[in-house]
Length: 149
Length: 32
Image (cartoon, rainbow over all chains, first blue to last red):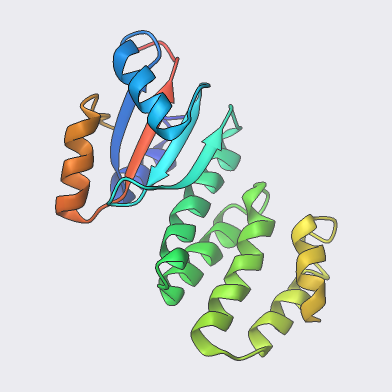
């Protein structure tokens, strides 16, 4: 998954990348494994600039699902910092570029939430609930959004 | 095109703070 051009571009644009290998960096693997409670591979953590974990992807995933998780984590980082417009743009990008990825339904939900947080207009939530009537209907995110209808 | 992973995590964490940029930390067992 790492050699994929889309993943490479996304990582290089958004992160400083670091790796600890279970065998080749055994000491660092143990040290950071304990620090971040990561005891299995592959585990990919997205840390904010202060080194605090913001998102975790554990286990192998097919390419689009993996990229979707990386993008979701980065979008959540903006959301948690109150950067609503940036977060909305990032969540929307997941839905548009990776509509079949596991992350897409969750991204659609948070697109609506980000838009609402920026505008305080309940229409943003209503629109999102409506969108879930045609897409990702069987997802847990559709259930969560149903209260906004 | 590739990702240039650093194996010096301490330094990456320091740089992240300096550059105000997030870090992607990969715990891997893949062949290197």
